Each structure stands twice: as structure tokens, then as C-alpha cells.
Length: 266
Image 1 (cartoon, rainbow, N blue to C red):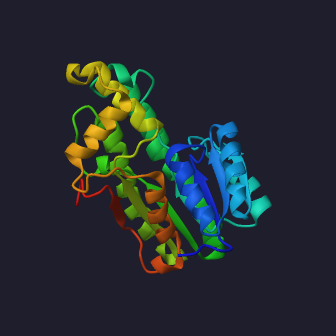
Image 2 (cartoon, rainbow, N blue to C red):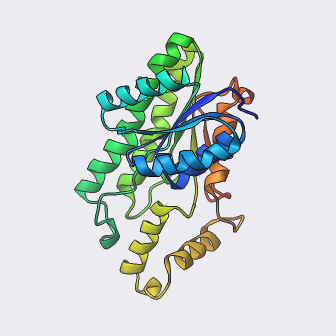
């Protein structure tokens, strides 16, 4: 599943999951446009990707604004010539203060649906406009296995990711006439800054976990929930993304793939 000569745009690429995905794509030969609201972090990731011998550039991208996204995409197209693959990683788990509560607040619903859902829609629509002109392209969305079933305290995040799974199917049907494949990867339990926030919330609100470190809470979750008893990594997700982005997935569209060690199998 080499990606030589392909150009990939990765939103939310400045760290965590997005950084791991960008790294895998670069390792496999892709030129990568690292796009993120945090330009400094994107620049650092782009510098790291340069070691793989392919083009990597950083761009500030606000996925909640169509106009600003349009400007970012136009800049990428001017420098790279095209975008073969869009990976929608940009996402949030909740608003500020999430760690101090065990329920989804109004502000959590606002921010998760604005970034996770609207952001995926806008990035897909802006880049798809270019892909349709070329008559080819791959869009890979990042949801979560939390979008597969309801969970106490995670209603806003889980619902936003369920929406991303649904959107993937809708976009797959709409863009199929233009030879654009749209699929979604559903990550499981991964030690990223997002999961650090989850662990901190557990530590503050569960007396049984008050004396544990965030990493200990994470490791405990792996042992309790994951049949394979091993954590997933950003690179695991990158491998799944690389498959969907490759020619090996030529006839696959509208599909969702769990990468969660068996935690959820539907």
C-alpha cells in the first residue's frame, strides 16, 4: 500500500492522532499537507516528516470556517498542484471544563458538533470540489468507536462521531459518480492528549481512581475493555487510513472500520 506521488491533506495534523496518521502516510511515500488550527504544532510535524524524503508543509486551517478553509486549500493546491487524499482528523472531545463534570453540558454539544461534524462537512465539501474536477479522490474520515454505542457522560462526543459515520455514507453516495471514495476509521483507546483529558476527568470524579495517574487509568481501561489487552496507537490508525487511501481500496466506499482491539465489533 505505497502512496508514492500522492498528495494528502491531514486536518488536525499538529499532534496526537493526526500526527501519527501524517507520519504513516509520509513513510509510505505521500507528500503531506499538515493542516491545523495550531500552526506552530503543524510546522513541527512537517519538519519531522521531512526525514522521509517527501514534501511536507504546514498550514493553519480552521475547519469551522468555509472561507478560511477555502483559502487554506487554495494555498495547498498552489504549492502541491492537487490533493489526492483528504483525512479529516480535526476534532475535540468537549469544551473547557470537561474534566470537572460527568455529564455533557450545552457548551460540549456546541463545540463537538461545530468542530467534529461541521468541520468534517466543510473540509470534505471544499476539497471535494477540487477532486470532482479531477474525477478522482479519496476522503477518509476519523470517527470513534464511541460513535457506535451510547456511553454515560460522553453523549455529545459520541453523538458527534455517530454523525461522522452517517455523513461518510451520505458523502460516499453523493461523490461516487465522480470516482471519489469516502470511508471512515473508528479508533479505539489511544493515549493522546484527548485521552489524557478523559483520564483526568475520571481521576477527579471517581474516588476509586483519585490516587491513580492518568496513564494508570488508561492502562486499566485497556485491560478491562479490550479483548486483545493492548492499546491502539496513532500509527495503527494511520495504517487503516493508508489502506483506504490506497489503490487497494479502489472499490471500497461508504465503509467504517473499527481499530479497537475488539472492544466493539459492530
